[in-house]
Amino acid sequence: MKIILIFILLFEVLSAQSYPVITGAPELYLCILNGEDAFTTYEYNLEPISQIYTFNLSATPNEVMIECNSNFEAGYEQDGVTTNADKTVYPSNQQGWGFEPWGFSTKEPFYGYGVYKLINDETGDFIYLDLRDARYARLWNTFIGGYSVDFRIRHDYTNHIWEYDADASLNFFDSWPTYQNGSVIQIWKERTVEVPRTEDFPNNFFENSLGLSEIVADLNDQNSYANPTLIWGKEQDEDVTKYRV
Image 1 (cartoon, one colour):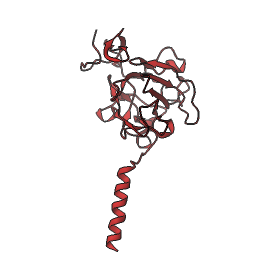
Image 2: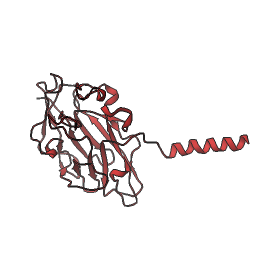
Image 3: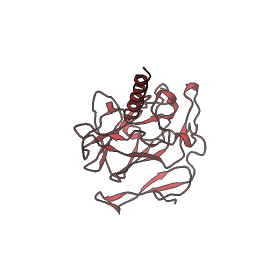
Image 4: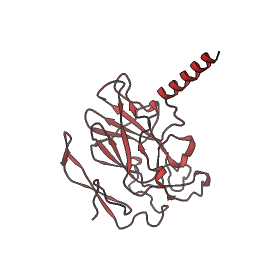
């Protein structure tokens, strides 16, 4: 009897290691198109390159924006992103990152309001995501024109381009605006909003600090660069992805 019990426990441990448990669905869904191989795991890193902000969901509708600490600065997709038999990853695969204010009901690791660089380790392809619009994820706040939290990013692995879908429906594929490798996706513009709402953030949200991002000129040569992209953001430590003017 003891031997049978040990066997059952061992089987449960091995099963848990083979099939990681996802505690919640992401808000930033990551999809892949034209992967190199089927059933292959790719690594994607969501790296913050500005100060990150969040709010306390339990305080709504009177939420106040605050600075995130290092525990909420995204990072690698926790399980890796594994393609299906057709070399793709769909939203229903539940790959991606969770929005920090949603807490235990979303998927770790978390992201917040700020600028992120999304990088694929295998190809070096990357895209910038600018989420600095206080309307984002505050759908209940109709006074400011709040919109929903879910959206999708799709990486065309073979063609080295990125696509964005502002309406992250799991059942339909809506329009997918295309972005070249190294571009900046400003989330509010895909919601037909020209100017982001920033007055809800702390006063130092936009200090006199101008980021100069790298842009790849030749998609087959990651060391070649074309015209840079300027990104406003709070002053922080220097790194190789941007320079201060």
